[in-house]
Each structure stands twice: as structure tokens, then as C-alpha cells.
Image (cartoon, rainbow, N blue to C red):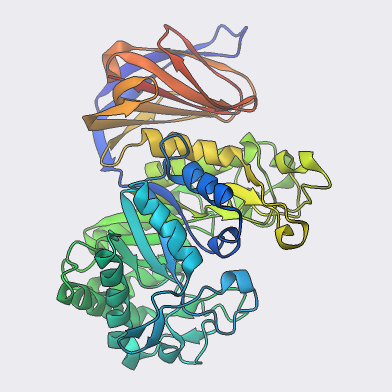
Length: 490
């Protein structure tokens, strides 16, 4: 593998150790989006004042905000049986061919905002089919009924066609979400779709979309909850999918597996399908070893923790890095863009919104007060994760190609991306980016080389002391401890 020397790295401020790193000339995968979902926070935030709703849309979708290039709209199943009202989205479905298009005004409002901001990738994703199509007549705890698969496919095609006629063009549809689980506790919508059903769902949906003139809408599946479920089940359904019916093999990663297992998942998905793999949901992570909770590069596990600082941001960065470099996924979506799982009372303790606690959850980029209905606190609170995602969405351009970076210190994670077209950035035109995440507490100095990625034009940094700061070109750039810095080249 040919490599080109990019820069010299000096560890620490007083350390004389110098380590050269390089960017491979061998292209990796093309990247097709960075985003998050609209489940289920619109049900709360839609009731906030207009200026707050507009603020949320700008923070997520505007180039001045995170500039997400992917947004996942939750097509609700009606929430029948769901014991958490916020997680019980309304459904458009009334009966076969009959719909209530005024349903789910909250979800539709933020979908419209994403479209108005020209978010390039819009996915319609489903947790549960309408209750007439599930085995228990509920939106959770049941299975998709075999005989209802044609009706289910027609329903989804009708929904997507309706929004097309309203000027909102979905690029993708996901007809199942964690189909390895019935969600029997009914804390949210969900239905089981067995491996033996999944190809039939994809193939039937492809036909229903095509019949509506929706050939451009790609189908992704199966959004398995973890590598442990995906690997044994993939061969049971992917080979039965008709050629051209599947646009992406989508997965989650709640097993928080090691690099080798994650790499295997990506290889299996692509080899069986012939299409890209996409990472389409993750949240709720914390250090697997409590003694390592201040180390964002440490192994992760599922569990409750609210970590709004650079630790929580770089933990997410670790997952994005693993997704792109090990699974070699072409796309990455965080779970819910907003969350009320802040784990504290901001009105009683304003500093709690910027301080880690063990009561909340790492399931949002932006947070709001869970008691807003009674205390009328409709403020929204930005975390460092939002700004980390801003680096990825702004500087890992749609259609750009990833190139491996090697030779960096073990606590600096690097990825390079090249675009075939010139991109407008806050520091000027650019065609290449180098994303560097310093997982250590000490600063690292890099000296960008013009030879590898072009003329260095500047960049942006997010650190413990700054949310977002741009800078111009210089001969040397310092990567603060616990930071993400993107260098841009033209």
C-alpha cells in the first residue's frame, strides 16, 4: 500500500519525540451521509415556542449549525400499547388505501424543516407497522404478519408517494428496525420480523415503490440491533433479496464489539449483498470499565450516563472512527437528535447541563428539560457531541472518499477524505479534509504538509474550552487535549 508523508507530530509541549504520519493513496469507501433521527423528541419539542423550534431546526440542519446531511423520519405505527406517550407517534394509516395526512404534525414539522434546509438524505424508517398488520394488534410486542406484507409495502409506498407530492423527497426507506426484538416491554414501538420474512419484505416493498414511480427511493435493511444478531442472521435473508432491490445493508452496534468483529460484520454485509453497509443507530454508551470513564478511547458498553463534555463527544467519535475504518461503512447516523434524558433539573442547578451524571443517557446531541410541561422551561442545551457531529457533517462531504491515516500516536485517531468537487467551508474552498481526534489529555502539534492533500487552508477545532473555532493556515497546528480538529486542504 503506497503512502505519502503528510506531517510531523510532536507529542506534548516539552517532548522531543517526533513521529511522522502518512495518508494512504489507496482509496477506501465513498461516504454517503452523517445524521440523526427524529424519534421521538418532536412529540415534545413541537409544543415549544416557535423561536425554539426554529432554533432546533437551525442547530441540526443549517450550515451554521451541525449541517447534518441525513435525517431519519419515524413513520409512526400509532403507539397502541406503548407505555411512554412521547414514544407513541401517531400513524397516517386508517384502513387500506385510506389515510389521515393531518396525523403526526410534530414529526412532519421537523421533516419539513429538514427538507427546507435541503438535507440531502431523508429516510422514512419504521419501528412498527399499523396494528392491523401485527400479530397482537398492537404497536409493540408482536410480529409482522406474513399475509399482511403486501399491504404493509403498499402502505409505505403510499406514505412516501404522498410526501413526494408535497415536495418532500425521501431518498431511502427502512421497513424494519431491530427486527430481532418484539419490544415486548412496550417502552417504545417495535415488531419482530423474522429472518425468513425479511427478504420478502424488501422484495415486495421494491415492487410497491416502483409501481408508484418511486424507483429512486432506496431500501435499507435490516437494522439489526447488534453484531451478535446480524452475523448469524444475514445469510438467512440477504441472498434471497432480488438483485437491485436493496440499496444498503443497515445495522446498529449495541454490542459495542471489538474491531475484528465489527470488520467482519461489514465484510459479511457487503459480500452477501453487493451494496454498501450503513451504520444507522447508536446511543447510550459509557465506559465498560468505570475506572476508564475519563478515557474516551476506552472500551464502551450500554448503560445510563449523561456525558455532555468532550469525553462523551469523543466516545461517539470512537464509534464513528470504528464504523468508517473497521466496518468500512459508507454512512453513519446517531440515534435521537434531541433527548430529555438529561438526568438533572436545569432550573434548580444550571451547571448540571454541562456536567456528567449517572442518571441521564447519552442518547442526544441536544437536550431539553424533561419537566418542561410543568416548569415551562423550554430551553435547549447543546452538548459537545453536537459539535463533533458538525465536524463530520461539514467536512466529510457527501460522496467524498476515505483514505487511511497511519503512524499517528495511539491516542490520536485520524481519517482523511477527498472530494471530487470543490467544497465551500468557513475557511475557504477545500477538496480534502483531515479529521484528527486527540483522545489524550496533552496537546499534540502537527505540521501539515502541502504535498499530501494539497494546499493547507485552515480548519476548525472543538475542545473542552471551545465549542467551535475556525483558524487559518499556518505551518503548525496544535491539537488540544481531548479535542477534534479538522484540517482542510485545496
